[in-house]
Image (cartoon, rainbow, N blue to C red):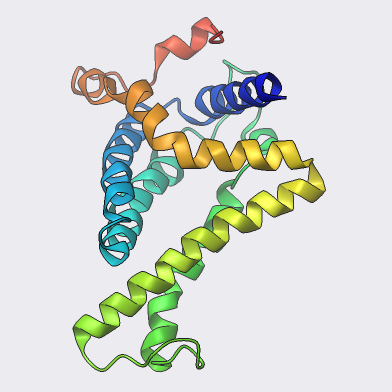
Length: 205
């Protein structure tokens, strides 16, 4: 069981890399995202509010900006797949689902501003500092909720193992991204916009 789980994790991680990380800019932004996420992980034990602010304002924005603005959307000649096909087979959050998640994230401070108690769910904020801390708590809930929602969703549309593997992948992505993309900024400074290594199609053991 453990062997199958680890193999599925390697497969999901490799598919994510080869399908959705062709751009060196995207890879570089993932490197920045990974470093800030690791900082957020540490801060989660000391100050969850700081962790949530860093996680969303730095880690998630850099990560998703890479996918939305810099990753090629045309035909993928390396994998012989259209952008639409890749969006359809995406295990986790494809761009359409990410739009929904990021919209909820962006609108939550507005909702909290006009409803200081968030419809009776939280203590009302009275100062700007209180407001930011409440926003951070809401963002932490949005992050956890988004992770659990897609995991359980995968239980039903795929199977339990796929959902658990995906959740594990997401939580450990900062570590793997750091290893995969730490050289991306150097390649980018040399003028390399697309990763040529993906054409080799060498799947890791």
